[in-house]
Length: 146
Image (cartoon, rainbow, N blue to C red):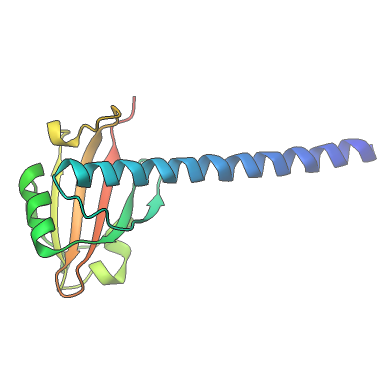
């Protein structure tokens, strides 16, 4: 009986470690996909990314210049939207830095060609929140799932 308890605890620890490893791998995948989508738009500054994974995608916070944001938005064909007054359930919009009147918002949905990455992953939507005063950017994506 005691051996069974020890085995159950050990199996639980293995499962927890495996789950954390899977989450880290998914987060690394998100970071690679966001970095690749930035580079695909001709932005070569390779900014540092701080990413958070969700069930259907995630978001990464980084720094971009106004020129890089213009290039990203133009090349993907994003549409501007008003951030102030909107309520968000998750992602960039929950971050206080991006949920006030100083933030600009851009988005696109429907997986047009620029949202298909070289590795075959596809975004079903991409949203960019941007603070020109701090040059802080938050790129939020949802993946097309098989």
